Amino acid sequence: MDGSSDNKMPFVNIKKQYLAIGMLIFVALFFFNSRPAFQCQITPEVNTYLPTIYGITPTYARLAQKADLTRLSQTLMLVRNFHWIIIEDSETKTKLVENLLKESTLKYTHLNVKTQKSKHSTASGVEQRNVALNWIRDHLRKSEDKKGVVYFMDDDNTYALKVFEEMRKIKKVGVWPVGIVGGMRVEMPLVTNGKVSGYNAVWKPFRPFPIDMAGFAINATLFLDHPEAKFSRKVQSGFQESEILKYVTTKDELEPLADNCTKVYVWHTRTQKPSILNPKKLKNPPLPDDHIEV
Ligand SMILES: *[C@@H]1O[C@H](CO)[C@@H](O)[C@H](O)[C@H]1NC(C)=O
Ligand SMILES: *[C@@H]1O[C@H](CO)[C@@H](O)[C@H](O)[C@H]1NC(C)=O
Image (cartoon, rainbow, N blue to C red; front, side):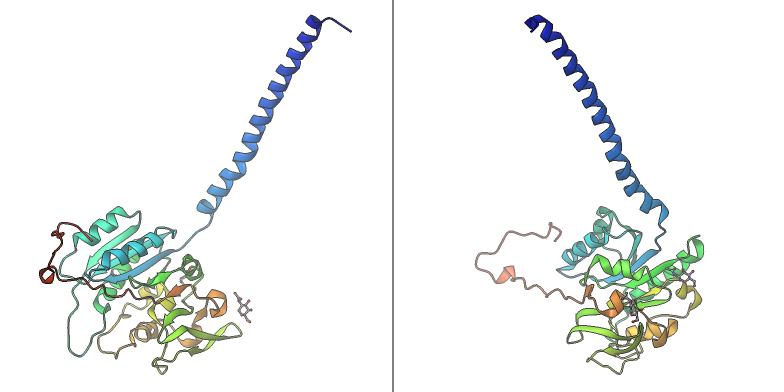
């Protein structure tokens, strides 16, 4: 056996070699790991064309407005290529809605028009949706990319991200089930051999299209082809959907989505009207809070 001093040198050399090999492995792993990751992130964004979804949302001032709009806007922030058109039922745009939009990361257009109240028609959102449709027409005429999908969205409904994936498949008009609406667990088109053959609806089933506003989306190009298409105050309640759809499609043309209308990706939820105690009637009234936006 050699002396201890002879043994030390090879030991030190081996450690250096290990170190060098270790560093090589580290560098190799770094490249190996990072390359597929870069590719995964960049490829779908650059190569996959996604038509813009134009979401049209009428809104009006009320106590739960900011809560409802916060919930909806934060869902919409997760949708790619989405353009939110929000139309206030008011004489002027409010700071509350303006701030909410500014603080979101959304692409948006903020409009306003006051509802023309009449005792014959209590329908809400008619003027607001029509103003939005005209904005879309102007916008599409000017823009190079004329493709898009138009979806009418209530500010208190609940939307799964999947409903947006579905509507990008639309050629003309796509339909799907809506949960908790029309007195039913789910109101939905009936599908036979991949075509809409009827509707499972109990509320005014004689409507030409017994579908809720949340249950369809329309190829935006159709609003250029049909400049006359609009909502109307002259129809009875529940007929707004049929009114707009009649301009752009027929039952035979409807494209059933959400796995042939077997999946629920949107719910017609309603926010309960909150009840606030009148401070003037309280023995121990709370501090004034008018300076706080709620
Ligand atoms: C809408 O219709 C136009 C014209 O037929 C078509 O080019 C386009 O691909 C359709 N879909 C979308 C999402 O725009
Ligand atoms: C819908 O039904 C048709 C006809 O039965 C079928 O060809 C098609 O694959 C179905 N689509 C989906 C998404 O399940």
